[in-house]
Length: 67
Image (tube, rainbow, N blue to C red; front, side, top):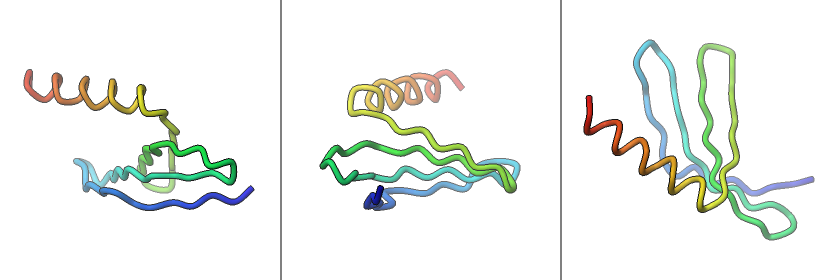
């Protein structure tokens, strides 16, 4: 299974962690947002559909306002 990935944005986070958001297009034509979190050698990837990506983005903006 091949997929095309385009990195949209990357962030340096506190404590030498990194985050990236990629647009991933699968062979079927389905497109998702992929959140990639790096912590040392540990990598966590989460694929999000448009609705989940929007909700997560809104929640992060709301949380940032409260900091």
